[in-house]
Amino acid sequence: MILPTYEKNHYQLDNGEELNKEYPDSFWVPEKQVRESLKVGDLVKLIFSMEETKGSDEISVERMWVEITVEYPNYYEGKLDNDPGGSDCVLCGQLVTFQPSHVIEIYEENT
Image (cartoon, rainbow, N blue to C red):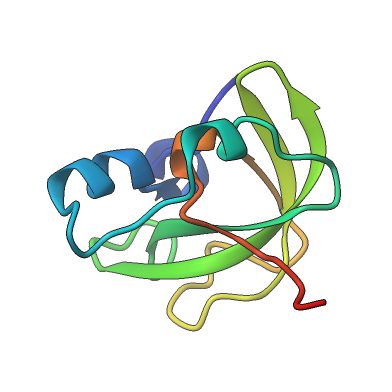
């Protein structure tokens, strides 16, 4: 598994677990067991830190939805569900590799 990096992909994903540890009173993430048992078709929110343009020193940070397309042991692959507003380095529909630790929200339809 190869996670995205600025050097190769012009973006990286923020670790939601680490943010939750650093800011436990204000940054919530779903339970670890739930994040580790996601299925194909689930929509999850990840935090993307992206170069505003390829090679730029300016960084744009956005929370965006990804639809899981493949489950692997200890990581997922998914398709980005929208275009970012502050970067041209990431596009709707592109594949994203991520781990359960990156998931900050899981979409649940109200029934």
